[in-house]
Length: 237
Image (tube, rainbow, N blue to C red; front, side, top):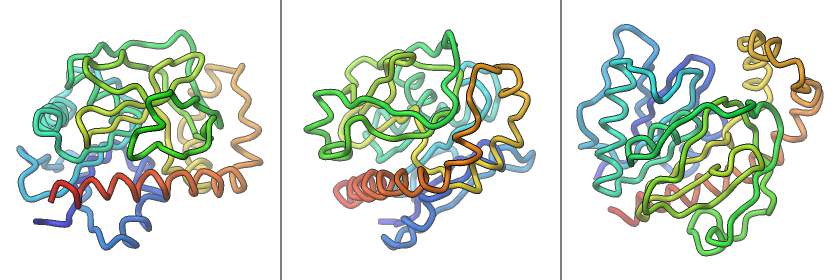
């Protein structure tokens, strides 16, 4: 069985971040598809890969875009076959949509350092058991999703009640980010400044002044979640 994970990256500034060294540490390699490039070729199937990670991006999972449509087909295949999959932000929305759930705009965005509250069901989940509750996370999204039919609800926040879910045994969607490091957050603030300016109620100060310490705390969460998710690859093999 291949030990290569297929990674679908939507935009240049939303890469694997802190996940990358965790893959190296566990002896797993990745094939990153830069979906934002015109010459990007998204595989037709998941054959030859041991796992799938769908990263975040500023687009909507509802967009009628050929690149997103190709990713949606892979997500549908992953859900059907219980293929080890991790969707982050937009990735979670694509998985939810692939499972038949509705994607919709939230009343207000979630942007910046935040917390999500773990559900009772999370205590028995292979990835979330024993994690801090509330869980420290980083957020940057406008859309949310309904909980897919048959999914296990794992986390919530006051504005977006569906923050994490599991389908089957190996397909996970995380609305929040665990992969962000301090340089990445600095870049997001710069690249997405127009979004911050459109929402002056968002306090950007913690993102600009406190990300080093918070990213260290977040990396401890990411290490547990990613290591446990990588365990689903071995279990499937």
